Length: 375
Image (cartoon, rainbow, N blue to C red; front, side):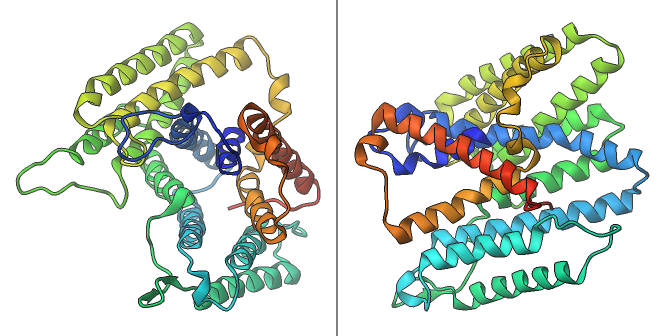
């Protein structure tokens, strides 16, 4: 999340090194920014087994967990669709500005999904009222929205699902697979491999078959299931208390994925925008490797002090992601920017790193004030 906020702030800078930015759709290249999202999907997959196992340990039935999965997915899809439509606004056709629309959207998300303090576990009238206000704001935004051109205006629609929407679909498929197949790890591994193959077939011309897709690219599911496989590997070797084999397993998976990625590269290139198989597998390799490194540093060497500095990004991830939506809208409305010298080259990069750190600290402060998104 720290890196996601950082790369999302690069648009405010000048003379950013090419290797830091997203590669264009027609480029055969992997920019630093292109790695952040698939690693985040990998983390989603990592968390699913632990989250579902935790709910089951508390006595939740499969039906109760399924309900939670569906509600969370719907929340992510709604947020994702609104954020995508924000990118496609035609401000000339609307009664409010794009910045106001953005502020109201972010506010509505907090009103509906904030984790309010409940008395004795019951929903208070105040909480109900605030959630209703949030829903009404969503409806208002949908009513006033206009996209397209003056000659051909459009209403809200799914241009694509947005980052949160893609996470929603990945979470839904990954959580359902683990909920019903969690006790059959080899089946899950097989499904993971199947998604990698489905990502490849999206780029292969097969007579009578036109790119099978489960709503979105199989790349999204492959990245998420890869994280789940890493968790299953951890749980397996944890029972045997065999840390060395676990790390070797992660290293082997990292090597296989990276080699596969470069083997596939000559066919379709490395491209995040097109979700090519080489991009998917190389990023999976990086994810396995990073997970192994972080496990070694935190669980074996016990170097965990550094993580406390950015802890709120892990405990209030969605809140952290939403804060810049308020800031960027207010920044555009005020037209008050830092001097160009502070937004150029290396100095600008330091500025964006500090910005990401400050957003996380603000997230922690808001959490202490009971302002924290929970879906």
